[in-house]
Picture 1 (cartoon, rainbow, N blue to C red):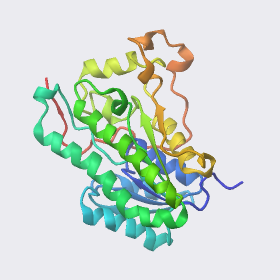
Picture 2 (picture 1 turned 90 degrees about the vertical axis):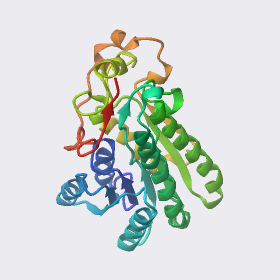
Picture 3 (picture 1 turned 60 degrees about the vertical axis):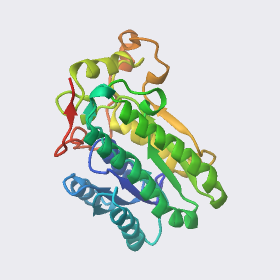
Length: 291
């Protein structure tokens, strides 16, 4: 039986690590043909080799898509290789610093705004003419932080709130062209970003995120990728302008509810995707914890 994304052509940004890697592997498993986009020092080519070695189809574009020329070139590379574009996954982004607003580094503010906001706008702008031709769709990575704010990282939450509003605006205007647009809004996910040893979170925040999650654990990148797959597929044909929370209930939490979670919820499910880079998202990145 053909997969849910059989013969769909999808661009996945931030495809080398974490949630992006899982999206790429999930989409390939479901039959999509892929253009994987990432920075030159991200393991995007490793993900592509894994997909192609398993009989899938994955090409690679390496470049900083917060730059106009790279965003446009990534879109054109996909169209050139496959002849069309059906899905744009706006997943690329950064989480570079933790600190109260009065202490937050201005250079990290500028870099976060550029990577999280400008890249989404540029990729959407350049992909839309192709998506209009195929009646395709866009799925962007938002965040629970964009819904309820993020203490010690108000900046990060602000960039995600922009993405939520931007995608909903795109959904409204692009319905006239048969294009859908939605957001997946992850909560605390088991990637480099949510561990003290691999990212800017201090030990207090790393502990608080699971305590505040009613299900009492981090989600897995694969659990998030499953929702991306649904929204990108024809099964979601009547879904546009939606913000899908994949957050273990953190946006409805009242206090440290994670301690009360059933042991069934606290255990991460065994995945089926051969992810290798879930905790590599901040390798070669300059991140900072402000104390």
